[in-house]
Image 1 (cartoon, rainbow, N blue to C red):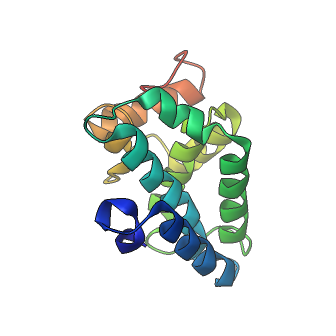
Image 2 (image 1 turned 90 degrees about the vertical axis):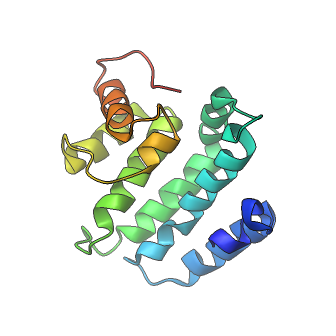
Length: 155
């Protein structure tokens, strides 16, 4: 999917089409069902956060759209359709899920995922991409937001 994205000489349309096709064809429980979620992050990174475009408010507006959150829910539902995943990448996918909910302003959904993740971020880079430069600091900030300890996230 990365090669199809706009930053690597593809297009947003090609990236979303590839991600959605793979996710739709995947069996329930497959991690690739989350590919459209990654496509939304790639889109937002390119359009809202690249140098010269740094408009984090637009990232939150984008993720707050009903259509974006509906697709995230569809992906998560398909991924979790066979129960709690136990594969090695499941915690990384959980972190992407939590971040998508945070950016979409969904505190209750984010809090549920943070409860499953636990208090430690581990080695998950997306928290540094969509927040402050330090991944752990961004993770803690969003986690505190989800639990009502902060009035807003770092973006």
